[in-house]
Length: 226
Image 1 (tube, one colour):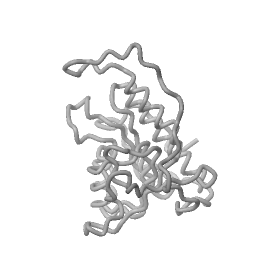
Image 2 (cartoon, one colour):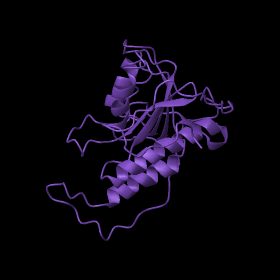
Image 3 (cartoon, helix red, strand yellow):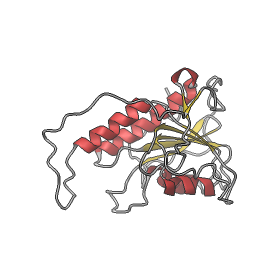
Image 4 (cartoon, helix red, strand yellow):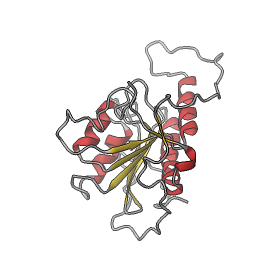
């Protein structure tokens, strides 16, 4: 049974939407580089401390999902548990990433669209809150933030031809679908998000520079959402 929780648009806080927009910039960069378009940003005390995108094709490494990329860079400055940190990611973390987030003790996860094949925050498995895991306390995971934009990025990717595939499928005749189905029935929540009514908080100067380069995106962006 699907246990994913989606926040209705009218209950989504403006600061959450602003940070999700930053994650979408990262996802767009992934798309432009031939990667599955998933991007993320980790936020602590109103400032970005790490951000990343998928790099599985670039490095031929199936573990280089956006979430794990960013975790590698933020842990030296933020030892677990990461209970005061919120992750914004365009697609629901897969089972692998949800497990990693549970192990580092993430405080909260906000995502765009669900992952009905590999989702680890309720769509397939409930890694985020399952009492079968004893690594760290359960973390809040809520979806639906800029959901349509996240879905359309994925559709644009799967419309393209993968030249790295052994037998690339011809997709020139495919038509990009623009209709977006509603979230799975029974998963909507009016006010589950702990910041649903919170107003944006002024952002202080960061203590550490946002890591750009290496395995993170090379396109600098402001530290605070515009």
